[in-house]
Amino acid sequence: MASRFVDEAAVAALVASDPAAAAGVETFWRHEGEPLVSRIELAWPGRSSEILPLFERPEAPRLFPGIAPLLNNLDRKGLLLAVVSSRRLAALQSGLDATGLRSHFPVVIGLEDVTTPKPSPEGLILALERLGVPPAQAVFVGDSDHDVEAGRRAGGTVWRAVWGLPAGDRAPAHPDGTLLLRRPEEIGERLRRLARPDL
Image 1 (cartoon, rainbow, N blue to C red):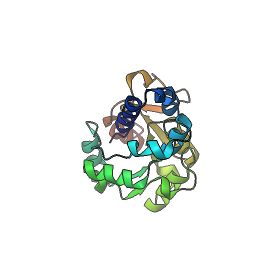
Image 2: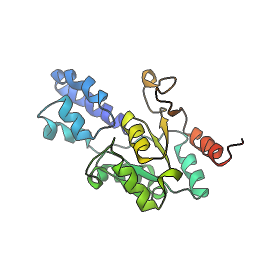
Image 3: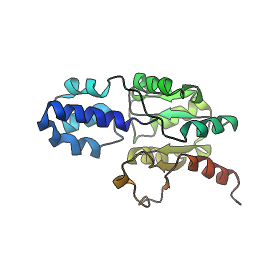
């Protein structure tokens, strides 16, 4: 499921209605991975209450090719899955329901569930506690620097998904050595390697 395109549509609508708001667009994207309200306030100070509704309009989320088969496969293997996001819980639940993915995730952690959002590991640790999974047995997959840092601080294996990022943001290698995933299918492939390191 992709939420970036929702942000892109909201930014485009904002700039179309207020061309001067273009000055804050770079700042907004530079802080990707942080809570949405914080990003809006950094980009357009004092206008959060006015601008936030643009980002919370009902939008049919996009489902990347390969995600549904991947999740079905992980379910068959009995793996426990969770979603941890710095978005509000209602938006997360709505997106999961709209894409038909909700049943794959017994645990969903949103902004309201934590006192400190990512890059704090609080949300990831809470999700693991609810799943009953120790950090050393967990794999965290995220698409931002904040996700990577939170995963590392939580004590699990961290992989970065770049398939949903604009082509210019897909670095050939992550500077800290984090594994980059360019296709959803790579998650299944990498999990098999973890289970069978001799392969």
